[in-house]
Amino acid sequence: MSNSSPLPALPLTLEGSWMLHQIFRFKQPEWGGLESLRKRLMVRELVDQLRAWETDQEFPSAVFTVVGHKGDLMVVHFRKNPADLYRAELELSKLSIGAMVDQVYSFFSVVELGLYESTVKLYRSLLDRDLVPHTEEWNAEIKATLERQKEAMAPRLFPTFPERRYICFYPMDRLRGEENNWYTEPIEERQRMMHDHGMIGRRYADEVKQIITGSIGLDDWEWGVDLFADDPLVFKRLIYEMRFDEVSAKYAKFGQFFVGMRVPGEHLEEVIVG
Image 1: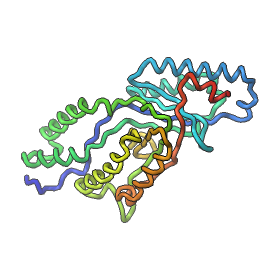
Image 2: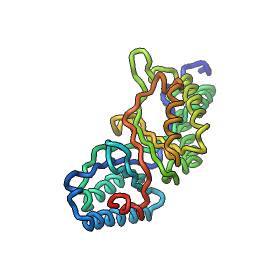
Image 3: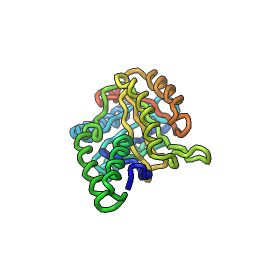
Image 4: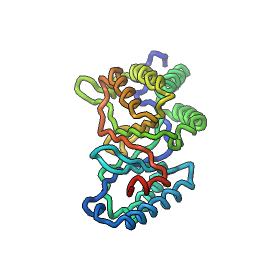
């Protein structure tokens, strides 16, 4: 089998922490009608729960306020598996403040690292050795490579929340239109475009920390993007510049954007109640 043979279409990925975004809105006038002391007791109960979660630094949770009409609070969880995410969701709903909010949006996904460049190199090397795609020997080589890379990439696969004040979260798809269809492009072409796309992000690496999650088969969108920065203007500049990149200009579809501010537990009562 020659190196000119078509490469398999599927890019390899590495998966890490499971992730859940929950967007809440306070019920009005129920919340507004509560006495200040009652509100404070509810928030303190929430803070206690956050502190209990924070004891597990490997899989933490965090609270953000949400700017605009789309919600009031965004709670984001990292966990080891979906069952742990469900437990966190259930624990949150059982708090007394749970009766005062409506969950207006959620997004379920898993931290994902796309390996376009290394995938193309690996596929070509296996074809050069005359291995046939999807055979037992081929699959063994793929598995061994992924295991090595997962160990090396562990800090990126199992992240904590960056120490930045602002968050920008949005879901997205790759276009599957009649004229432009990401999934019908050869893997080498997708790899080229993703490389150019990634070079833009690297220019903002000192200002923005990014976490990409995969949600194909898990939620209504294919990926989730979390950006963290101390200056929210960076979100606008980065995303605007990427609009002119081929990947975004031709193949990207975006969902709602949620922008918020991180609220440490010790300041939550002050922010919510005043």
